[in-house]
Amino acid sequence: MKELKHLKPLSSVKTNAGVKFLTPAAFPGNHCPMHTALALSARVKGMSTLVVGTPECGTYSRNVVYNIKSQEGELHWTYILDSNEVVFGCRKGLIKTIKEMDKSGAKAIMIILTCVPEIIGEDIEGIVHEIQPEISAQLTFVLMGHFKCNSYPSGYWKTLVAFGNLMKKGKTSSDTINILGRSPREKHVPMPGLLTALEKRGFYLRMLAPKSDVEDFIVSPDAAINIVLSPFMNPLAEMMWEKFKVPFISLHETYDVFEIDSLYEAIEKALKIRFNHEFDKWREEAIALQKQAKDVFKGKSYISTHIGAMMPLPLALYLAKFEMEPMLLHMDEFYPDDRKWAKAIKEQGHDPMICHMVNDNADIELLEGIKAEFSLGELLKDSSSIPCVPYLEDLYGQIGYERTVSLLSRMLKVYEKTNVEKIRRNSHGNS
Image 1 (cartoon, rainbow, N blue to C red):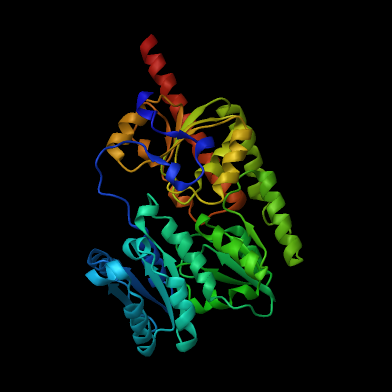
Image 2 (image 1 turned 180 degrees about the vertical axis):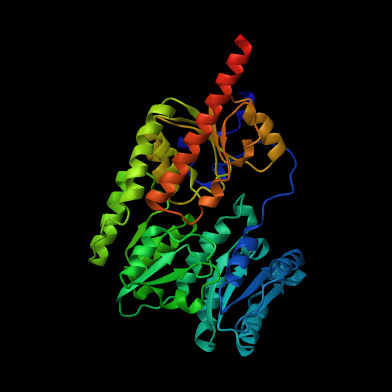
């Protein structure tokens, strides 16, 4: 299709800059990554924030933190550059402001630099290094210039890596596990069976995510292992391995039953435990569904749109096991880890087009013209021409065999419903 000529195939995408918008229609715009950096930091108990930028950044940031209630006297300040500082830098004023926040009781401060201070090359790393010995508040920073990205997820994962600058190595606690990507206040999200099994064995699960305490981040290198449930957390887990040698096992990318087996065995080995058939029911159901899916979906082409927190490339690699053909994949962000997934997909003989979908009405019209046999994600949920599995975002926080069962069950149900409707249409046509 000529409308897709501006897009790149997956094999040609190396960074987020290679992910082009699907349609050129006007739209309100994505959240600036400063938005997500600030929203995340402000929701961590004990973390104060300082946004450095223009008056527009100041107005925007106030809207982000407007409804966030201070729990331990957290401060959420903005530093607005004047015309002189835009040219010559804001080092002197920034140091003064940080010291004022320290005197006002800030325990830890996330300094968020927006576009202008990053463009003029403000040396925030040097400022932090210089001033840290003079104050009590722990400092860290993140560069959030919107001009460097086309979406908001970098505001999450880069900020989480910045939390790593606050961490301090302690004596390893063999019964402590960091759960990266689950909030301690997510009671509404079902606890994955794996985590329940670990709790039953007496392990302390330290949840690291928004609404955690900054102190939990600071002491987290004492854990025996990091278990990763979210793509936003992988860069932090990798940093903790490199800096503190905390091993990690990432579970959110894996759907295949036998690959899940290997991950659970790795957890058993790392923690010196054995699981006692707790997962057999889910595992057997997942195996049966995988066999059924291979028969049903072999050779089927598909489109992937908005699928929540699930990473599109690991999912595409899993679906390749059923010989499904990816035609077009939406990506919110091309993560650092995505290069390895892209390589693996290419090795399976697939090279789908990659895009960024933000203009729903224009995108839907174009997508229906592609003539795919299946779609994942909610954009095409009302389509009469392409069967769709919507609302995959409610698989957020789920891992392991249970998630595989839920995903494949939904896909097969949609396929079965489509077949029934097709049979009905044919029978009416022949009567």
